[in-house]
Length: 87
Image (cartoon, rainbow, N blue to C red; front, top):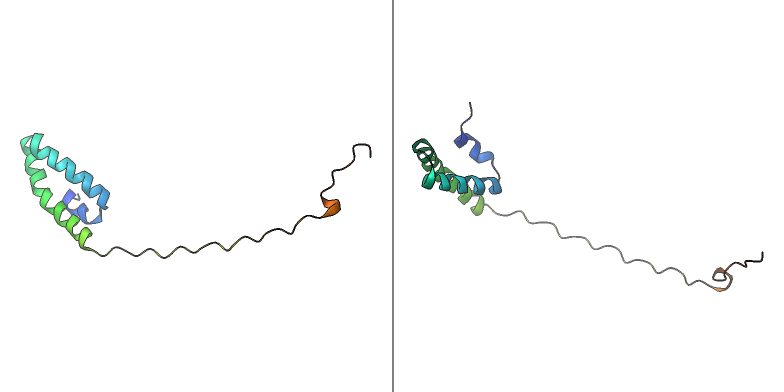
């Protein structure tokens, strides 16, 4: 069975922060087993969060601008006339 410590490298930063908050809460208000387990895993979580923070962030490519829209040709004469209702 995979332990929680083995799963830490695969967790995202958001998941690690949530796990750290839960572990810190259990250290304060958990049972004896929960306090021991949470205290053991907190340094591992902190180390992984430090690795993520130290890693260079990927640079997002610059967004391309849309081509300017062409103006439609002006409408002339008969194209603007409304149809007769008598016809």
